[in-house]
Structure formats: C-alpha cells, structure tokens
Length: 293
Image (cartoon, rainbow, N blue to C red; front, top):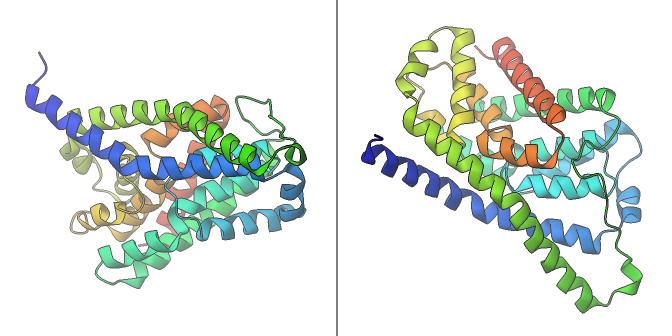
C-alpha cells in the first residue's frame, strides 16, 4: 500500500508544476491564436530570410526577446511551422526562447550571487547548442515533422476584424485543450518520479566529471522546473557539483524536461522528438565537458 504522505507530496509537486506552467501555456496558446488568424503564409515568407543560416540567427534573435518557458513555446512553434517557417529556424526559436531571454539570464545572475560567469557560460553553451541542433536538423529532416500535416488556411481578406478576434480566441481555446492534456500527463509523471526516486542515489552516482554532468542533466529533466526558477535550484548544488555540471543542468533542463517531452510527442513525430532529445543531450554534455572545468 502506498504511503499516504508520499501521495500528498506527489500531489503538492504536481500542483506546483501546473501552477508554474499554466500562465506560460495560456500566453503561448494566445500567441498561437494570433499567428493563426492575423499572420498569413505570405507574411511569414517575407519576414523569414531565405538564407538558412540567417533564418536560424533571426529565429534565435526573436527568441531572446520572447518571454516563454519550454512548455508555452511548443504551441507557438507548432503554429509557426504550420505557417511555413523552416523546421530548423522554428526549433532554434523554440530552444532559445526559454533560456536566452533576459529574465532567465538575470535570474541566473541573481541565483549565483551576482556572478556574470554563470550567465555567460549558460548563455554561450545554449547558443552553441541551438546552432548545432539547427545545422543537424536542416540536413536530416526535409519535411516539417508535425504529426498533423494538414494546414488550415485562413482567407484573411474575407474576415471582418470581429470575425478575426472571435477566430483567434476559438483557436486559442482549442490549442489550450490540445496541449493542456500533455502538460497534465507530463506534470504527473514528473511529480511521481520526484516523489519515488531517491535523489541521494543520483548524487552518489554523479561524483565523476562525466557522470556528474550526466546526473545533473537527468535531474533537470526529472524535476521539470520552469526556466525562470531553475537557477535557484542549481545554485543549491554548488557545494556538491562542479560549475560544468551546474551549467549542464541549467541548459538541458530549459530545453528538455518530462512535461515538454510529452507535449512534443503530441505535436511532432516520435522519431524526430527522440532524435532532438539525443542531439541536445550529446551537445550539452560535450560542450560543458569541453569548455567548462
């Protein structure tokens, strides 16, 4: 019989993850609705540079000024791809927005005692990872990789402004219920693992440099923290893990965790999501081992 105290703890973690994530999900689906109704495929084609390198760099630039978490960005990315944004550029935007925006970087600065080094390490490694992933995706995947290939076309010139507002909210509500169920499943899994998996076991494993980085990345994946708050959790491990391991925690967790994995699996083809996770894991692990002592 399950321990009642453990179930209560799991329930608390589950609710806290939902409360932390929901505002960003709501913002994400609202922006998705705006893109669907007010942004045409022709507008996207004019805005996004034709050059693949410039399209990725412009997507990263947009991500820097976009305040979103790794969950709230998924419906926006889905809609951008459906509107014709190249896969590599859309994924670059999806990966950079939760980690390179000013609020996340400032929270890192505060969490580590006004230390700029952790900010530069986190931002620099994240930027390099995004470039690597975008480069690989541009060569490996030639289609948009969405589970639902059908794109709903909106005839913008035939709709009144009131029709567009109504359509925007209708689309946002549909998007919320579409991605919301994946958030709930992911939050429940994260809460269960955090409750029943002994963190002390992971800490014992992560004593070496390689194992330390891998364990901290696994911990960031399991804990499913919001990128605005994860720096404060990482800073609590300063006496146990190296700066390299802490940066691995900060970069990987902001790009991939349990709850957004479930959401990505509901949006993209399974092979693509698994490849994306593997590439990010290898890139973060390799770059943090190579450049941070």
